[in-house]
Image (cartoon, rainbow, N blue to C red; front, side, top):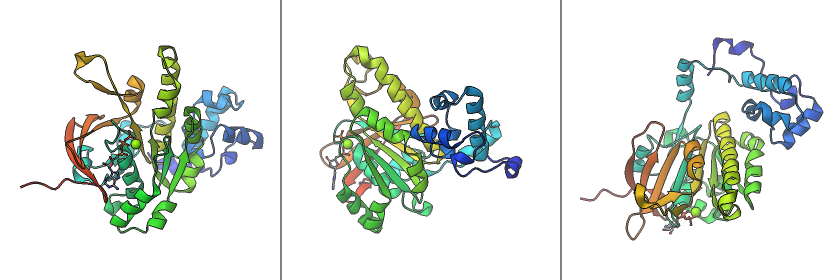
Length: 326
Ligand SMILES: Nc1ncnc2c1ncn2[C@@H]1O[C@H](COP(=O)(O)OP(=O)(O)OP(=O)(O)O)[C@@H](O)[C@H]1O
Ligand SMILES: [Mg+2]
């Protein structure tokens, strides 16, 4: 992403330091969740209009923020360099990492869907611990933000997993910021206002567990479907912008529903339909293999990886490989 002209570009530290943003505008922007240069760089002109900023000025502000973090029009070769900035986070299972092409990618959304008890939240917990590992151990050397919609997060489980990795459980817990979302609007609000927390705490993993539960229970019936999809779409776009701005991994969980149309062979489908399908770049379907701790992970869609399946297991230690038999 960096060009030879980088040195000449001004570096702004706070949103007020951008020309055209005075204290009043800064306050309005903060109210809209734009606390950092990084999130302003990902804003749209329409979003800034809500802060009373006219389109021409909004355009200039966004451009100033973009050039400050060296984000502008990119040539294809530079795009490749941007791709090189993508990092990978281990799931704890070598096989599952393999299925994902080396682990969970930063700058993109990874969705785990499956029925209850299939291991979605367990993987989410494990990633909150693993993200804190140094890169040589498969981590990103950063913290985690966990948006919890169903009161699923368990600190005790984090302690178990941290001990197994010989990490100090107290320290590990300190690096996980928990945000409980009570409604879908609250969930969206939390994410929209998370940029400062992400920056200040060196957050490299954003978890939303579950992405769809509130939306599903609040938007009932056919007539509210369009509104639900629109909101989910907006929510996912905010997530992808944050993941790109902070080179973080974004992981969401999703329940499944039985689909009445058996014509397409799938009796189980993730909630959220095509909106979630289009915005989430990597989707993994989880299911129980047989009785016991073994789970099957199926890579259902990815921008560049082939479909495939791998086994892993959930034990007291966390997410692990299944021992080879024989
Ligand atoms: N400490 C532990 N030791 C071993 N296995 C555990 C432990 N904690 C959880 N598990 C396993 O993980 C399962 C729960 O998985 P998880 O909570 O991730 O499901 P989920 O996919 O998030 O389900 P839901 O849709 O209800 O949120 C348990 O049924 C159990 O098999
Ligand atoms: Mg769960």
